[in-house]
Image (cartoon, rainbow, N blue to C red; front, side, top):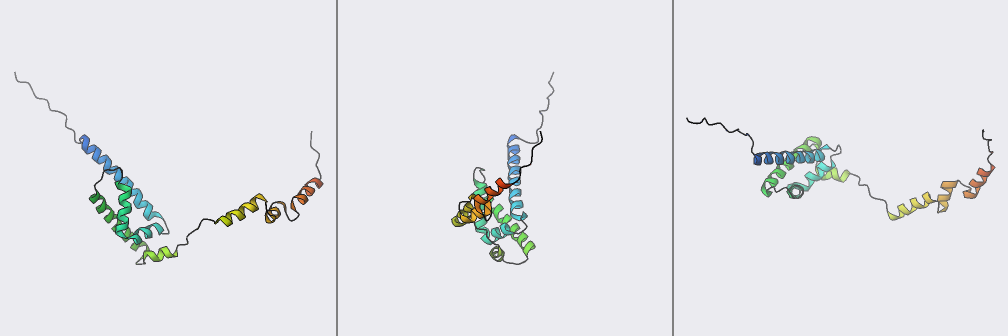
Length: 160
């Protein structure tokens, strides 16, 4: 008597496809973070920096960030970087009109770290190691006057 053949279970996704889908999902999530980071700042400085650098500079930066350790082919990343640069350019035009990105970057006030002289001056006042610091910490009479005022204060009796 012939034996009835049983069908093997059909899997719609193979192991390789699942790995590929997971890698694609992870890559898309990371690209989403980059797009949000570049476009989200209200002042538009980062967006202007990307557009002002040009597509070749963006391609290098994007390639450094996404090529390392991900095993992605360079031509795919270059195409993706070019498309993202076109997107950033259109967002820049939408936000700032046809204003040149360099003009926006020139208007940004750059905050410089304090100089060594400014740090030393702040340290002197905080530590009361200079005449200005003594006046700041103890008042115009200096530490002796402050101690005299503390000694002359009436002491209230404590409750027992």
